[in-house]
Amino acid sequence: MGESDSERSLPKELIARAASFREARAACPPATPLQAAEVAEIAVIVSEAFAAVGVQATVVGGSALALHLPSVIASNDVDVVLELPTGLRPTMEEIAAVMAGLGFSKESGRHWALGNCLVEFPGGGIEEPVALIGTARAPLRVLSLEAMLVQRLRSFKNTGSTEHGMQAVAIIGAIGDRLDMGSFAPMARTEDVVREYNALRVLALGHDAPTVTVAALLDLYWRLRAPRVQAEPEPAGRGHATDVTPEHPSPPAILDVDEAPGLPHPE
Image (cartoon, rainbow, N blue to C red):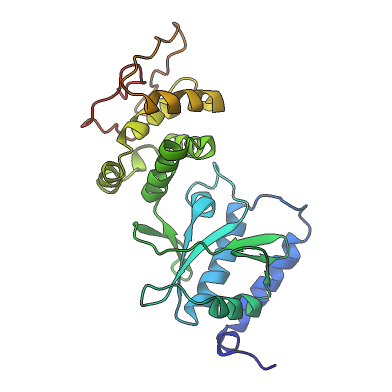
């Protein structure tokens, strides 16, 4: 069988980089999280390969967080949303032609493997703001940190995901006053996660922020779920008072909502 048009159009440099990446990762034990530099490398390879056939790629999920906050969050795979100029998703055959051309093998579901590195192609399109990360030669389209934070807050609110609650705390604590409130606040209001943001912000900036636990997040989740129930006052010394100084600036609270009794106050 001859090469497809997609395989023939792939730059040989990308195919060689994919082979080098696979060889380098072969020395890592299975399930070793990807370093931010590894996420960036495989994301560039995949993004440029799809760009060569007219498909736009955007990095999302935990891999996007790893690119934004490399010292805080690791990623177990690389999540990439693909879109044609029409806004539609490429067919499975079109995706397969590019990924096979790079040396990937098909795994279960939406995953493709390059050795022990997994790439997933979630469905849907990108409506949220994106950021460009990387060099001028190889910029990556990455879902904006503000959009990522809203997604994590929405998941925490709707499902009680402590993993996403912890990631929201990590984002708020790490980004400081670099959070673009002009972009974030309208999205937070639209998704109705302002109360979740304010409450998790207090945890993120508190004296005990480094030791925020799953139990504390679950407690907060249920308190947010029952805003009309007066919570028991916390014992003295267990409050989450903010610890913000000029040396440690913080993103501001959003103060145009009524907070439930007993929740950590944003200011």
